[in-house]
Image: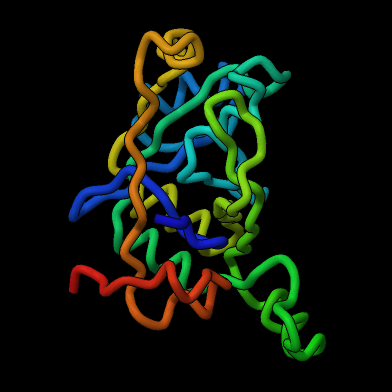
Length: 196
């Protein structure tokens, strides 16, 4: 079956969605200990979360890039995840979209959406896209204070996954509630009925 060009794929249950971030040890250690993001994590900066494991590996160089040597799997509530999508704006205007209206929406939205080429196990680009979600302002506060359920450091498992001795997380298409596909610029074929 052909994968839709823009589709959210993630590890999720009825209650949570797993997203990934990479940090230096100072941020990662304190986040894992506190089970929430605390200083030196900076709320005033945009923070990007990624449901795609392989895209996180591409971005962090398998946790080898400076400042990204610790990869965290963060479980957040599905309600929070869907709030972020509903209050987002794509980083670029859609085909035929009014530039002024898009610029206003971008300025007023606390969440930014980017669609970048998904990656395979060797981190080569695939012919379809993966979502990256940038949180700022109110969205960061909600992420830190309300949405986060657990934070796990998965860095120690990356070598085995990269070598093929362990399986990567089993991501599957995320069932977007009706109406959200247009907000985030997902492909129409990616829409499925939500759980509610």
